Amino acid sequence: MNYLFHILTMIGIVLPNILGYNLIFGRGKILHFGPIAVSLMSAYAIFLTQRATGSYLLAIPAGLAASLFISAFFAWLALRLDSDALGILTIAMHLALLAVVLNWISLTRGALGIPQIPRMQGLSTQPAFTFIAITIGVLWAFLMHHIHRSGLGRQLSALAENRAHAEALGISRMRVILSAFLISGIGAFFSAFLYPQYISLLHPNDYQFKDLIFYVMCVVAGGPGSVRGVALATALLTCLQEGIRFLPLPYSLIGPVRLIVFGCILIVAVYIRRREIFPMQRTV
Image: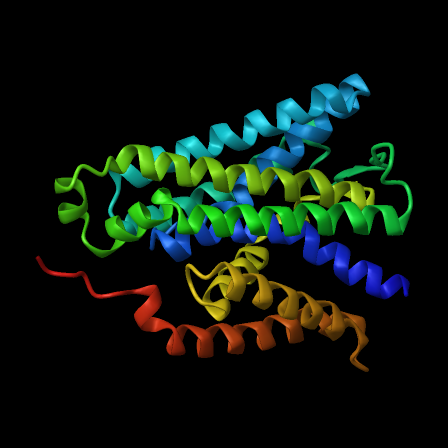
């Protein structure tokens, strides 16, 4: 029963960030690889503030502000760079922010991480934490479904299909892209707020490049732009990720085996979904 609670909790934790990322990468076809960087900044803003003040009432606004700030910065880059350049730069930003966290030892404790993170009142037991995580994940999924079907979702699709035609129809590219990135940033904030509390530790190893690959794989395997598909893929791949721990293998091999399995899944998913990920531009 505890393991079932754990699986459900992990799904609820990652779902807001992945569905927010799906809005940008899946629906908008924007080659953005910065969702883990947003979570990283948000998490450290939350729990450094909580550690300094002892109050989540101050830590939550700090984390949300950090998440929205870095998301707005990525939106600014997306408005000014070509697709390939944006993808490379967002990966570089992720690695640069990770390097800052690892080397600013006096503030972040570097590779030691921040241990003994207290849980908020009401999250002390496993069933309570699972209930809150799943509730947030489900409500966020309903919200994202509404956004995808709203004018913002249609405008994102129009810009992805033919930017010049969409702008000629009066669609503001700056407003649409900024809105999409800020919504994604809020989803990243929820994940950053819950996960360190769940494991009682904030550590840079939980924000590595492999986690970005997992996010990309969930979006591609579930169908870029599909809220239901991506949510289902997230649930199934989270179960697979946690289930690999039970393979009769040495502990040192679990990580490499997981990367090999997920790499194969990603290659197959990209091949099958290649027309959805890289659609041909419509002509007027």
